[in-house]
Length: 206
Image (cartoon, rainbow, N blue to C red; front, side, top):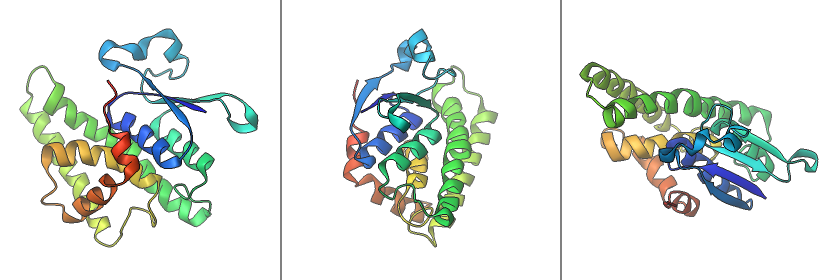
């Protein structure tokens, strides 16, 4: 059994999306970041950087109970544990999956969160920052769109690479910027959005 500590953010949705796709049994443990629950001492033992998501696997390697934070690490761990093709075993296929997994986790989400801060959450509008991050996000979406012009998914078959990129595409591409100028990205998004696991993972829980 896996306990998933998460909230309704881009990284939070990724982890729930991954567990829904994995078929593994898990329990949802909401961490209400609006109430700063991520700073509670017990949660900091799981995620020292006070971020969501985190997991506790009560049947980890060797039967040990383990905890893990960072969404990219969680996607890889769950993908390996599920062994259902979302994180391929073939080393050559893994190279490409890892490339786009890290792009999604380290580059795309990181900069998309800056976009969201200045466009949505900043207490005062800072037009220069808004303009800058709007351009950055549109450039990244163009990169994704070009790649999907020649590929059905980001790294061969549907994988954790796609899961790492979907959340920010939905939150910022669909709900804010729009995908009309990015037809390949829209096609990819809509196919993933229709998956039953995604429909469940994006169900509000608070």
